[in-house]
Image (tube, rainbow, N blue to C red):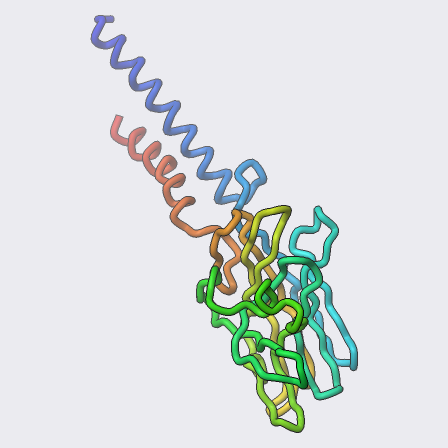
Length: 231
């Protein structure tokens, strides 16, 4: 065998090893194994948790490792309301449509459509600027002042949230369906998710990482097949 052939064979073996490595990485990612950690941590509640009795509450702990509840979704027949409450420091919901109740400012919670981006923004319901006056966010309500809330009589809507894990801020969503035409009759929590990359954005309803990173890995599998075919 000539020296040139020997060098060529070595290069081919090296290239094949690299393509096999890329292919295995792609397969690992696409199968969702734990060796490549996904950025989106998703909890699927199936048919959902249905809140329909007065005072019913569902607590949500995004990062179960710390054992700290971040948010609670509340249903009450008093004023026929669905609220989101913060349960930990630095936990907040994407706010808007604020309205006054006595001396308390209550920031209404914004309902996101599927695919809308959740990250920083102009108004959050509980933060340093008014954390002493805003303890919960209205999602849907019916009072003497009228009915309202961006979640009333909706499905496939998402509450945008943010919270801290240690010193790092994270963004996420909670899917809540609210029944009732002019007043809330129940609230069904269908699932929730967050981006485990600090300060990383998430889109409402997103349950897997963006396709771009997996697609790049998958090129290894495609490249290996094409290279072997053309050898």
